[in-house]
Picture 1 (spheres, helix red, strand yellow):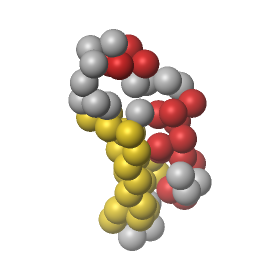
Picture 2 (cartoon, helix red, strand yellow):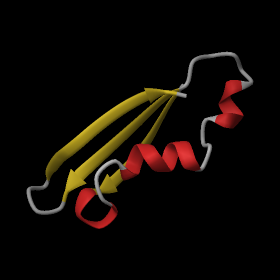
Picture 3 (tube, one colour):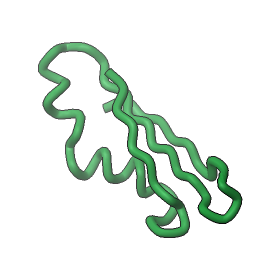
Amino acid sequence: MYLFEFKLIERAGEGAALRQLRERGYAEKYRAAGEPVHLIGIEFSEESRNIAAFETAEA
């Protein structure tokens, strides 16, 4: 299972996408299935219109 969160880095700050996935516990309902859950936080820059940060973690 892969869970994605997208944020604008200028509005939310660096690391906000992955932090939201963890803080809100989005992975909890998928853990019962016994499959690995991967968290992926992607942050875009509004100025450059490109990916500014990309983080992954295991839930």
